[in-house]
Image 1 (cartoon, helix red, strand yellow):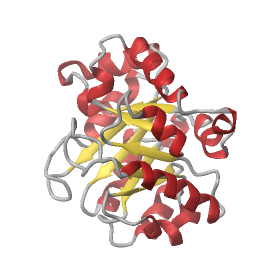
Image 2: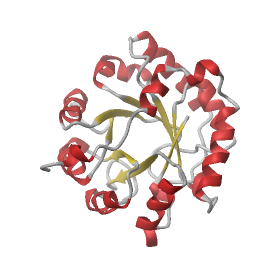
Image 3: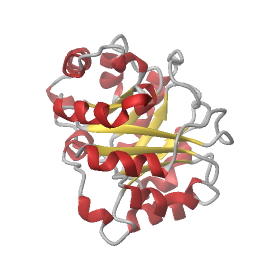
Image 4: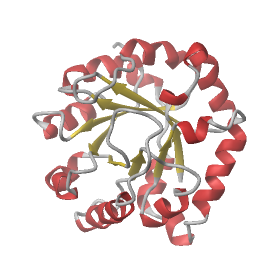
Length: 246
């Protein structure tokens, strides 16, 4: 399991210190929720904040665009230091074009599905994605309760990706992820877990990471650890060369 803490639940008065501390604690990824107040009923931050945080750490920046027409800003977030850009199939008019553009920028391309969106929406895009994100809540606010039907959806997503010839595509879950459901999510097929309030509730980041690893481990087995998608995602790293000349 890879843990990607959501910056949305960090202390905004000292973001630079927090991301640096996450790296020291051994956290590999950082999830950055970009919200525009249009696609979702909340406004967070944009590319300038991502750019300001990039020199503070070498974490893999997992940028989630909850933005109407988010494909308009791909160049901006690539230049800011994103490593993975995730767009919502519900928010971009031409999803395949957006995913292709992200890969053309040298970044990993992810596709996100809202709770009410069928897994089949990703079928004809499966060859264009590097990650599939399943929302565990309706997007917009941190701290929401996990939707229990998400477990079945994660299982269906893993089965579908395997059937479509993409066993190497990791499944990420964002929203309502906690120590209570981490094991069940991993057992269902999740490779990357995004946690905001549940993770940052523990001030000691190393202890928080260890707690999530233990909880996720309860749902893992030798086959889980060898899952091609997890192995692929564990190899992803931040590459500063991606931003050269941008």
